[in-house]
Amino acid sequence: MGRARNLVSLSIGFIQCMLGGIAVVFAYLVYATPQMRETLVIASEEVYLCMFVALIFSMLSIVSGLLLMHGENSRE
Amino acid sequence: MGETRLRRELGLLETTMMGIGGAICAGVFVTLGYAASLAGTALIIVMVLCGIINLFTMLSYAELGAAIPTAGGEYTFAKASFGGFISFATGWFEWISNMFYAAFSAVGFAYLVSYVAPWVNVPLVSVVTVVIFSLINIKGVKETGVTQTLLVVVLLGLLGVFVAWGLATGSGAGGFALSSPGGFFGVLRASAFVFVVYLGGEAIAVSQGEVKNPERTIPRAILLTCFSLIFIYTLVTVIVFRVVTPESLAGQASPLAFVAEQFMGPVGVVVVTLAGIIAALSSVNTSTMAHSRVAYALARDGYFPKSFFHLHIRFSTPHLAILIGSILAAAVAATGVVNFVTYATDFGFIIGFVFVNLSLIKLRRDKPGLRRPFRVPLYPLTPILCIVTSLMLIFFLDPSTLFLGAQLFLFGLVAYYVRMVGYGRVYLAVGGMNFGISAFSALLAVLLWSGVLPVVLPAGVGLVVFVVAVFVSITYLVAGFLEVTRRSEARG
Image 1 (cartoon, rainbow over the protein chains, first blue to last red):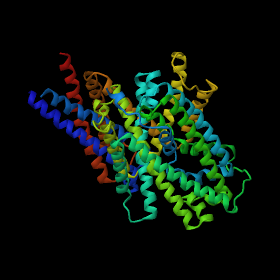
Image 2 (cartoon, helix red, strand yellow; image 1 turned 60 degrees about the horizontal axis):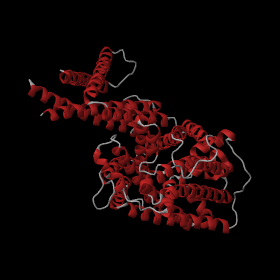
Image 3 (cartoon, helix red, strand yellow; image 1 turned 90 degrees about the vertical axis):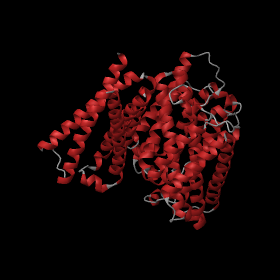
Image 4 (spheres, chains in turn yellow, red; image 1 turned 120 degrees about the horizontal axis):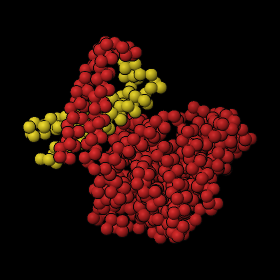
C-alpha cells in the first residue's frame, strides 16, 4: 500500500510539474504569437488576464508537484 | 559569520558610480522621443522636477543607509521597521525587479549591438552578457566596483562629448519657447514616463554592506548621484531642444542618436550608440550586484534557502545568490520579452520607494534614539510627498503594470507561506487548491461537452481543450487527495 502510494505520489507530482512548465510555455506563446491568440479566440485586451491565469496555475502546479515528490522522497 | 565576512571595499567614487551607472540605462536613450511628444519643450522642467522627487526619496535612503548600513537595501530598512511579511514583500519585489532589470539591460545592450552589427543573435548576446557580469560579480566586490567605475567614466565622457559639441555648434531648428502639446496632463504623463530614468540609484543602498565608512560615504554618494543625474539629464534635454523641435523626435527609434546626427554627423550616431551600449552594461553590472545582495540578506533572515547566504571562500562574495539570480535573469533575457520585464521592473522599484519612506516614518516614531548620522530635512513632509508621488506614478504607468504587480505579489505570498509556515499546513492548503482546480476543470469540461460555453472554438481545438480539462481534473483530484490525507497521517 505504502509503495503504491509512493509511486502514485511521484507520478502525479511529476505530471503536475510538467503541466506547470507547459502552462508557462503556453503563457509565453499567448503573449508572443498572434496565431495562438487567433486559434484560441483570445482578444488582445484579454492577453494579460490569460497570462495571469496560466502563470498562477503554473505556480500552484509546480508547488504542489514538488511537495508531492519531496514528501515521498523524505519518507523514503 | 556571514555579514562580517562581506568585505567593505567600495569607496566614495565606486559607490557614486554604482548609483549613477545604475540609473543611466539604455532606456534613457529611447524614452526622450515619446516624452517629448507628451510634454514638448516643457520636458526640460519635467526632467528637473522628476530629479527633485527622486532626490527626496533618495534622502530617505541616505538616512536609513547611514543608520543601518548592512546588506540588503530596502529590505533591510523594512526588516528593521516592520519585519514579517512586509519586509519579505519589500525584499521579494526588490530581488525580482533587480533580476528583471539585469535581463532588461542585457536585452537592451544586445539590441544596440544588433543596431551596429545586424548579424548578431540578440537572445544569445543577452545571455552571454548576463553570464560575463555574473562572473565579474563572483570574482569580487572590488572588481565589480572597478568595472563599474570604468564603464561610468567612459559613459560620462561620451555624454560630455555630446553636450560640449551641442553647446559649441550653433542652434538648429529647435528653440526654448516652453510649450506642452498635451497640456498639464501631458506633463504629468511625461513625468511618470521619464521618472523611470532616475530609478536604479538605490543600488547604493543594496551594496551598503560593502561600503567603506558607510556613515559618511552613503549619504555623500547618494547626494552626488542625485545631483549628477539632474545635471546630466537636464543638460542633455537642453541640447536636444536646442537642435531639434519636439515634433521631429516622434517616431524615432533612437531619438538621441537622431539628434546627435543633426549636429555631429555620423560620428554622433556612433557616440550615442556607444554610450547606450556602455550604459546598458553598467546597468547589468549594478543590478547583478543588487539582486544577489538582496537574496543574501533574505537568506540571512531565513526567508530564502541558506545556500544564498554562503560566501565564496576566496572571493567573499555570495556566489550562489549571484549564480541562481543570474540563471533566472539569463532565462528571462533569452525570451526577449522586453515589455513584460520593463513593467515588472518599474513596479518593483516604485513599491520599494513606498516601503522605504514608510520605513523611515515608522523608525522615526519607534526608534527615536537610533543613531542617525544623516537626517532627512523637512520631515515628515518629505517622505509623505514621496509616498504620494510614487503611488501616483504606478497609476500613470501602463495598466498591465498593475496586473503584473498583483501577480508578483501572489508569487511572493506563496513563497513566504511555503517558507515560513509548517509543511503540514502547506500540504492542507495546496491540497485544497488542487480540489478547487479539479472542480473548475471538471466544470469547464462539462460546459464544453454540453456546448453551453459562449466561446466558439474550432472543432479540433475544442476537443483538445476538453481532453486537457478532463485530464487536469482527474490529476488534481488525486493530487489533492494525496496531500490532504498526508496531512491527516501526519496528525495521526
